[in-house]
Length: 453
Image (cartoon, rainbow, N blue to C red; front, side, top):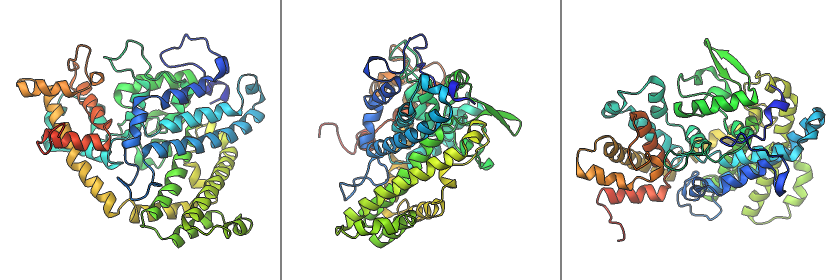
């Protein structure tokens, strides 16, 4: 792969537009960021759980604040890598500068959780488990193996790609979703494959999940062809290599959820001050002697952790950039098959924090309760609306269809022609709900509460 081909100003759905990177006050990549910010799907993240629902502390993050913080880290990573790439591949300087890399990575980071269901990652499992039930087999009889895998392994990354790249049939005749640049879409796709076959066992970072449903496979292939993204062969089949800047999107997300979820664990009283202090100090061990005099002037424990968190993220950014630089050629050749954070000097303490977070934060009573709620609420909503859209033989189901927003139906508020389209769109409808809306709708449809009371 070559940077000259990987960087593209072309917009999905508006391929004939003649734009330059720096036209009309904003670059095309900065416009990508703005389009995501003003999308309704992004706005809903403010009421979606990151880890803790209704936390005790105002400091604790939700999906929206996590996405903004990830975008900030992504911009720094992109700018630093961009500065390196522009100076090494000087012909790029005629069209781009280092900030374009930062803008691309930042926009992709901003959107990285836009497809996540309510109730955290347990929402994905709740939707997947619904379609694995014996009672759901009746819905899947007309689907292909890949289409079944889309539903039985429902993936927030693929839902996100659908949201930003696909225009709902009843919304507009202009294709391309948010109409972002090809390079931003490619950076968003950390796992450039479909749901089938499952290749998690290969231990290749870009294949451990999937990033597009069968419905969006042609869209991704179009983007990959335009950018000349390379391919490699696994188990006799060809798969696209990961777009180089997607490594930075992954690193920004990993950095933020590892460090900040641990900080939130302290805010929620699940991790002690000394434990967080020691873990962050280990990340900063090469700088600790220099930082300690200033650190000792801070007396409030929350402020101390805030300081260590800030310095730790900065250190991880610098280490990540160095790994990218050292492996740039193998990344471009598709031979680098790991997470960048797995190769930084601080990788051991990062692994420890992730393990400790899983055992004591992600498995805490509060989190387990929200997971249990998701397993109760989401399958019930799926059952109600799937039955309504596939079985319109009774008046009640026809009335329930009126509750489904236009964008999840065909033009004229009719169900789609295929079972796959209908099942996927209902899954997207449920996935797009906020935690609060899903719970309230569940209560109303089950007669537990009434609208307006």
